[in-house]
Image (cartoon, rainbow, N blue to C red; front, top):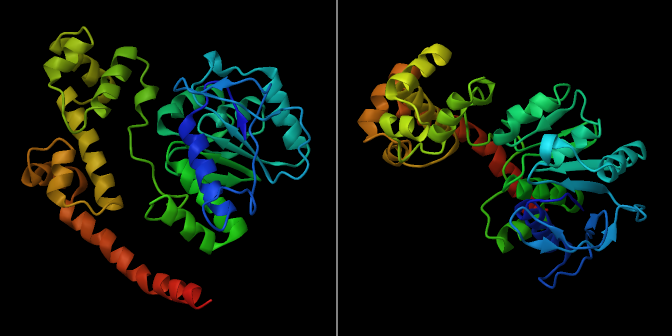
Length: 334
């Protein structure tokens, strides 16, 4: 695991904690079934994005013989996404030598900077979508999947998805039994599939050229439940309400309130399709006063009620249950 400057602790800990529990039969943290090392340009402590330092035990010049994967863990991006040549050359050498590479969190940026993600489907965190596209247009940026394996390169959006990728690797190499052990010890319900969508955010935001508009929509997204008054939003941007309205109408064809509502409706639809939350909880969590308020606008935008969307998802799940039950029964029998 190669730690880039200002790497994220979550990506590192999600991966190592899953491996730790899979590596041993009990909970003694012995690296029996799998093992790992932390690499960087030196063995001096390297600072994470949270200000907590971690000490690598090897350098990039160590012998890589025997490793199945080289994992590049990123975090806070450097200016202009420029990395030290020590890292980019290391990644290039690993690729040339046939090692399987994994980019976790913004480690994908380092892989792209090394020139190995051209025409490769790349899983990105929604927040970095446009930044990645602007710097690396030859890569295929994807934000509706947690992790992707393409051409012997694995990329992961980061965050909690790092544990889903780790569980995938454990199942691939050590079997379902070890996955179940990891889930139980880490108090997780299940591993999410690679194609599980990330929580939706409007990917059109960064494409707006006007910085004020990008900031306005970003603030809307950060306040989907406790909604901002349009006057309050305008004040935060040092604009009048009239200026804010003109800005939205010019670039989106919608008023600020209508655009805000469309974001909340989109989030509601994602929750209906991907969670079992009660309808009234979803309504309140998306900034609507009650379920009837959500239903009125939801039906207008999606031509169906929230209940219909949820019912369709449950019906689809029910149709899959016999096959899943059969697979589980076969696994238990084995």
